[in-house]
Image (cartoon, rainbow, N blue to C red; front, side):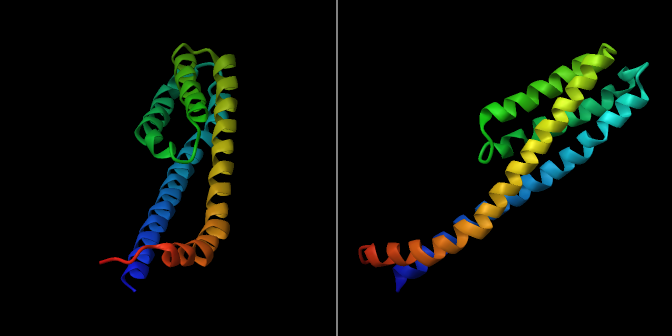
Length: 151
């Protein structure tokens, strides 16, 4: 009976951590997405002087930098690196008032954030719909049956 309780407590804690991680990453991505999705219009409206948007890009860059480490459990390093590089290039183009390259980079950044959103939604759905029920139905029963007695 003790081992059953211990296994259930461990399983609940692991699942709580996983759910927390997915929710935390989803919230961050929603914030990032709302900031990034407004950029194309801002760049189109300020074609002649996009350097006025430097502060907006710096805010996005700081938001990304502060939260990037939260994403390592869900995303590959390559995907995260591409987004970081895109933000850095966008900042440089914006500071130098290079509209054409900045606008291309904005569109790339939008596509990276859209891709991240799709991945987060997939992970969340897969975890909630597939992993939790299967884990509790099969694995806990098997683990409990095969555990040596606790003394």
